[in-house]
Image 1 (cartoon, rainbow, N blue to C red):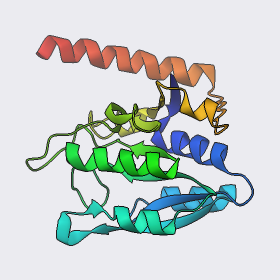
Image 2 (image 1 turned 180 degrees about the horizontal axis):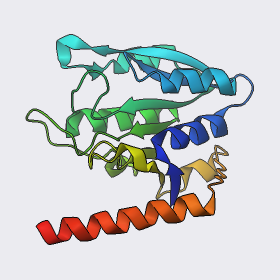
Image 3 (image 1 turned 90 degrees about the vertical axis):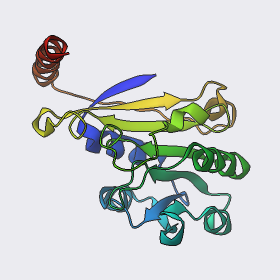
Image 4 (image 1 turned 180 degrees about the vertical axis):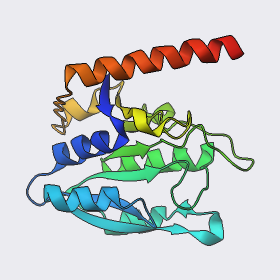
Length: 201
């Protein structure tokens, strides 16, 4: 299931706000993109910071995640490709992330806005590929990869083929209001861009 958003920031806000409830907490990377932390504070959702390991090419400290999570942890956020570190996680590491999430009975929120902007040898692997292991919510936008920052077109993708969020009672209800004219303008620009791009290739 997909939801169109006004950029990735609105997607982040909608997801974080939908998870906020008394005593709940979310795991955020350190270092990180500050919007996750700010939105958690605004929504009253406790956040806990897990480390990225520079000696392991900024991989996620999965042992640290297990140590800091508890029965009130609802999700962990990953940023891949990473902002600000620039690394791209391997297939093997992302599978371990999903297995850790399954063990902790939490979902993974994957910020993938830089998926088209990759440097180095690691190919990009979408976290949604591992949604049979653990539920994944993917956040994305076209602004970074297609270099159209003013368009403000983003999305939320729910990757939960086994229906675990519903079956465990951890369901998310997302309602997004976007002015109709704004959405029509954005889609018209996107359509024009795609036609121009097709002519060049």
